Image (tube, rainbow, N blue to C red; front, side, top):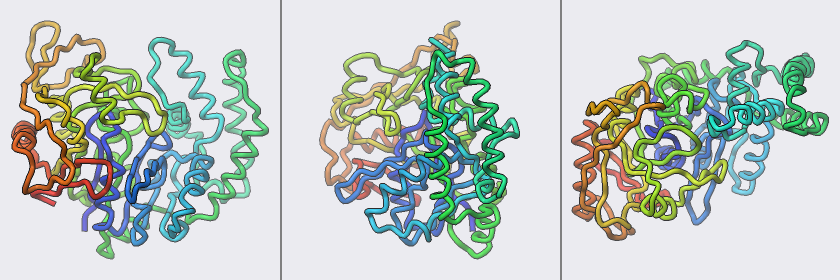
Amino acid sequence: MKVDVLLGLQWGDEGKGKIVDVLAPRYDVVARFQGGPNAGHTLEFDGIKHVLHQIPSGIFRNKTRNVIGNGVVLDPIVFKTEIEKLQKFNLDITSNLFISKKATLIIPTHRLLDQVQEKAKGENKIGSTLKGIGPSYQDKIGRQGLRVGDVLAPTFKDKLAKLVGLHLEILSKHQHQIEFDWNALEKQFLEAVEFLKQFKLIDSEYFLNQELKKGSTILAEGAQGSLLDIDFGSYPFVTSSNTVTAGACTGLGVAPRHIGEVYGIFKAYSTRVGSGPFPTELLDADGEAIRKQGNEFGSTTGRPRRCGWIDLPSLKYSIMINGVTQLLMMKADVLSIFPSIKVCTQYKLSDGTITEQVPYELINENITPIYRDLKGWHCSLKDVREDNLPAELREYVEFLEAQLGVPISLISTGPDRTETIHRGKR
């Protein structure tokens, strides 16, 4: 059996939560492989909207086991809040949720460090969610972080005190910028750690590889998007982890030969939260119309998302580095308000060069998108299925498939799990 991977191809917020929920019944295991509470995976069904931050999106399917992998950074306080919100839905969470002992812990001082680091950047701020993601990954790479498995050791409080001491020394230099009560924060954190101990803390790499040997089907769930990858994204305006397919191997402990289908999710247009380059951004009425129609506000931060037309050079780049085998197009319904739609097919660089490649100097390069105009479907997609797709939407999909070289096997026409059209390869 293989591990199928599902990830975003843009700057995050593509709709991964809904798709994991739709696909989960096909899989025995859903496993998150990177990121942390900076993620906001939104699912909607039975008239209720759910936002998950760290818990895999298969949690609403009682027959699916869910794993928080070693590549995730886990905040016990956020975790406790998430679980408490889910308890009213009568889910078998303690039986179906497994947490890697090797996942890195986010402690309260990581969030404080995130705040002072972001403030220090001034006009060059990244647009951090201020959830402590960057500082926790810094400690992981610096070989001084705490991991989930450490909470089971009798020396945990000593290890915590040592790390907090290092953080407080840094924060003492910024006392004029930030106020906090460490005793209150520590009490809240330790209560959350005790709560965390109730769950199955496992050697997830052994668990997942044993599941593969048994013939179980596994879906690896990514967070953020490929253009936010620490290596391949719009650096330095990126997240702190590898959001691409290779990150599923290191974030779960599965060998590359076990990777099967790679589902690449993208919106029928583009959005971005926070700072950084965005070649097709619309700072006009069309951009505002997309934002309102698509309810484009961050599910984690509530910040309004920047909106623009679809960007094919960046999508081709993401498809290439991820080895995408199937494309899933989200929010086709949002573009129903437009009589015509623009598609960016190439970039014009400041020296006049025309290219389909994403340049290294994406940050400082003056990029002018070259657009192709297509006719919009300009009608409601409610109750639309594959056999009665509007001709213009079918043409849009077929144009994208021809340009991208990968089949679009799913079209989302609304937020609910039922508003999904399956087509072609599955």
